[in-house]
Length: 183
Ligand code: PRP
Image (cartoon, rainbow, N blue to C red; front, side, top):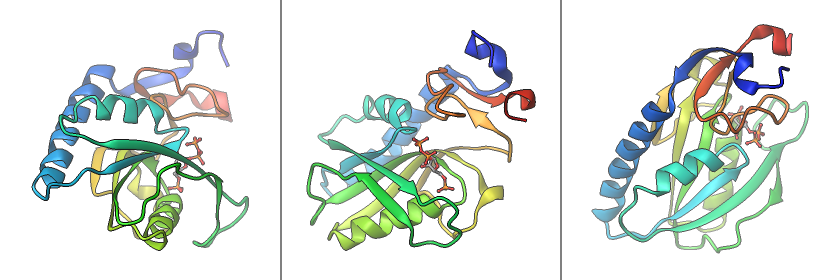
């Protein structure tokens, strides 16, 4: 890894400006769906990858929302759905609420499938998902975000919350990592 993290990026997929524009579009689309039903959703960010995306997205909501965070991790080596560990649960109760889960990326889909099930079991009235990125080539579980920012190829993408070994989350754009960094 270089001392300047941008030097480890092979190419930029989505610039900061493109991400901001897409966040505005997503927020307008989401709000229109909730406003039509007069709903104040709880917007739940899955730590840590969702943080930059969630911070950008919620700036463009014009109506009241509540925010919360959750941290989950898959048990190492599992290949089936049904194995997610809650490291930090939401502070707010989801019972009877409309939950909007915020993710940075849907990869195999295991995390979202489990988290969605968790909120349904908590008695949420409705669970929707917004993800900044979708990597459909890697999908194992048949799940799709209700709202998706961009579709990415099956490459090692970092930045805007996405990490490699906990690094690169603070890059203000999405880029492909140079293979020599992780090979
Ligand atoms: C990453 C990412 C998603 C999940 C997607 O989280 O943020 O939550 O993996 O993968 P899946 O679709 O295969 O389940 P990670 O556990 O690396 O935590 P992080 O958000 O702290 O990076």
